[in-house]
Image 1 (cartoon, rainbow, N blue to C red):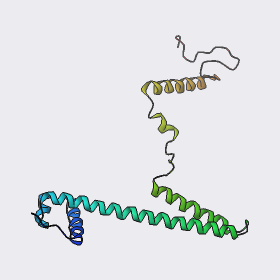
Image 2: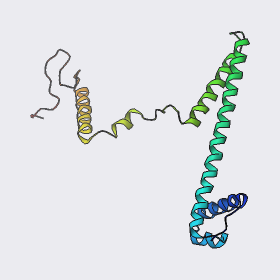
Image 3: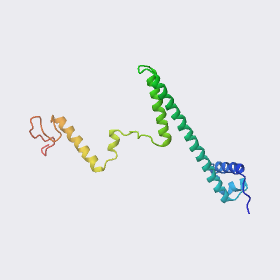
Image 4: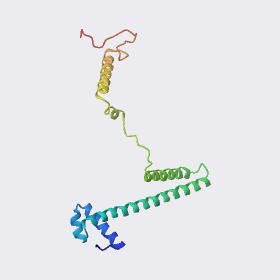
Length: 167
């Protein structure tokens, strides 16, 4: 029967196993290096990730608590200031920035608009693109012939055909 590792030794082995795994070592090679079985190596790696996740969650909670303390302090100071004070905008900006960081840590970020008009057309179907280009060419032809509308109507409403069969 295999001997159980002491907690401190288990943590040390888990971090070493995760480090070697991240470097691309095979489980059997890690097992030889640490003097444990290959099955134990996988359990150690899982344990190392669990430790990191717990550390990250605790760090995240601490950061959120600190940002909330910043927000509370800024609100306290705002209540004591004259509304014409130059410090008001700075304190409001601090509150906004701290809340944004809390939202980011909690995964509640607002979506960022990144599309421009041209980019939106790249996702349209081929038929929609053809239709758009046809409209653009009709508008261009109408402009060249002095027609007001792309549908071929002149300024007086008479029908003007930008491209006729006689051309």
